[in-house]
Image (cartoon, rainbow, N blue to C red):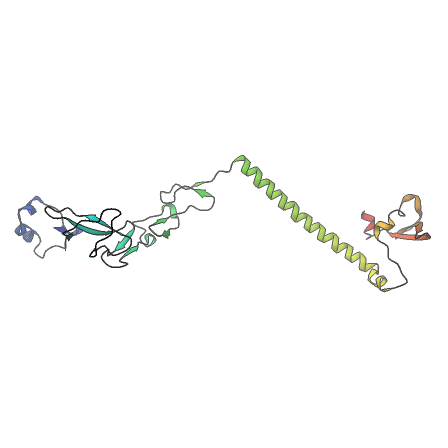
Length: 240
């Protein structure tokens, strides 16, 4: 006989027969029937199931029953599965995360259900077992710290380089417009020289005059005597 555990406390007097139970529980007790599939046993490993095999649900298994005089078996859902193993698709995965009292995650870890069980992953930067509440911070080795520091340093340098390069390009563009270069480019009788072509003339030995706004140098360009004025303030050449 099976009864619901919360509704019954065993007594040796109950072994005397039904009349004792009826006296103690006049309205009866909750019962559960104990049965098994008779006249056969579970198929051996590797053997096909018989045509009338009762364990038709996936995620279920067969267990031989304890019988005195005849072979018998019962069907059970796998561990972490629940339902009716005698029905097709009767055994379904238990969502442990919906039953935190039975399947807890320690220290507030977040439960994640999976087929056949559940996990309590540790937070980022921690390792071990969230179910047991043993999550600990990951300690980086000296080599790992050095590698991370090097990568971070390279990234900072790359960002600074891009920022400086952008500022220099913007400064050059402003100087280009300020000195009328777009207008000069449209003039067919005027020849533009690059900064590198003028550097040989912009030497102290070629300096012939200096005022509040610039310096004047003399030299040869295309075999012609020329005078070049180099602005002092706001000049790109001044910073080179």
